[in-house]
Image (cartoon, rainbow, N blue to C red):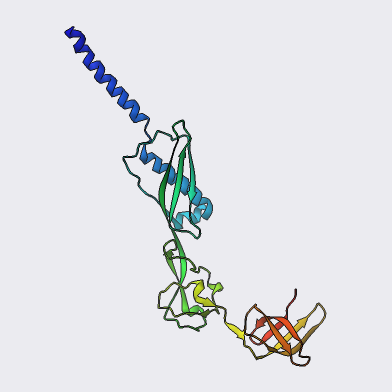
Length: 242
């Protein structure tokens, strides 16, 4: 009887160990899960930015989750869905779903740092200033953290008018800018009309202000006829085509 009891105790301990080992094997490894999320997010943004640009300009950091969470092991049956706000927001969420018999879903936070050369002011700018190349320079910045409206194309802003003052080093944003009026209300302008074989010019009076490319109304000085025109240069407009 004592021998049986003596043998039964190690057997019970062994069975408990095996049961514990089996339970451990059935639990999802959290570090491995986070690696899956990193791999999936990396593949997604490599497609968005192309691999060479991704390597130089994008950094991905997967957040931690509570280590006390217990999920059934599911490395081979995971699906991922990236939930991101528009305009390259820094903080996104990846929805991870397990399709095993013991289904589960978890949301994992991920931060995306995207770096680009952004236009900033080289010196103080005042309202009404017309931007030239000397007013601007590029600075490498994390565009996920600086908000919307930044500019990465110099030609897009040259000749634009400042709507508000900026300090040296401030990010230049599209809401800060206006297209300057190069035709003023009441100004005498040259009105041109052309076809394949003929070009005609006359003069007119601008009825409103207009910036380059804008359509405005002009009154012909001779006939008093009001026509729609397009501003093509300072003091010059062209009959607008429909």
